[in-house]
Image (cartoon, rainbow, N blue to C red; front, side):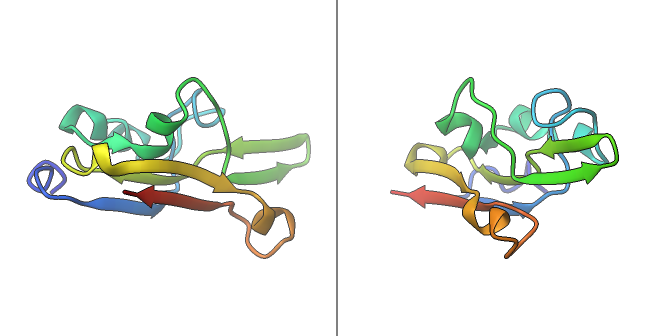
Length: 110
């Protein structure tokens, strides 16, 4: 489906409940292999494109031995839309105030 629609201007955003292991979290989660194929199909991780070389996390899961941070909320853009992404960032205030268990993902499209 993602390969068929890659020539349309599409923003795919949400809680994917997966991430790139070692980069976005401590280990692979369900469907991480499929998620990591999106760039091979031309789709762009908007956050990674706007924040090269940085790490940030949208979900913090607390375990008995500490906590595990993960970036599982994503915005993927199709190749024709990618140049229009102006900014992509997380707002942590909502998670820190316990309004949600996720940080808010904000994407600006020019």
